[in-house]
Image (cartoon, rainbow, N blue to C red):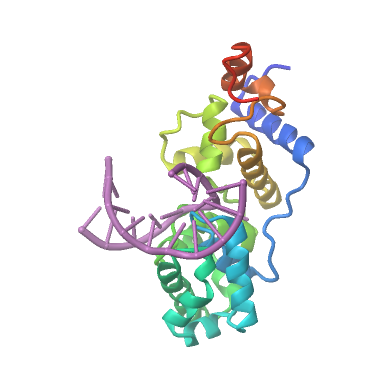
Length: 233
DNA sequence: CTCCGGCTAT
DNA sequence: ATAGCGGGAG
């Protein structure tokens, strides 16, 4: 079964990843607000460390926009310390809580109830929210079909020869948007699967042996072909 | 030692 | 284009 279109290829990749790893259950949280907090705290940070910070916020009763506004920034920083960049991230959480309060009366439905393009632009204008975090919020909190591109996505697609690895964020995102149905559930699962695959198999030093995408991957084929020159195991 | 579910300021 | 932010785990 060889692929003729990018859409076929991306669909095939999704299918193989899903068969290999199954549903990833993203984004783990008790509320949409917590998802947004997590999206900010996980910037360039291992999720494990974010979980501690989230637990601290909940234990302190600070997992709400009002409480985040009321809590002094340095106290907030102390609570989220395990997630790293705590001073910067405390400021980011306050920036989001301020916007949500002043413009949307702390109502996420109100924030999300606008054209997706307008929502994304509003998010991007908030201190601490860049393209990836904005799309995390779009997909995992607002349940809108905006594909999340991260370094893992780029690494996997680059190894597969789909992209060069030097395109801007929006260009990579366009590949998915132009090839897949605009389904938030699909985008949710696809991104999570790429993440899982990059962490577990398509790592910085790839473990090509046993990779479910080996048949589609020039990098992997070369690695295995070089019999013992191997890209690991 | 590196790496993590990035973004801002220079 | 690059420095700075930062704790935690392998």
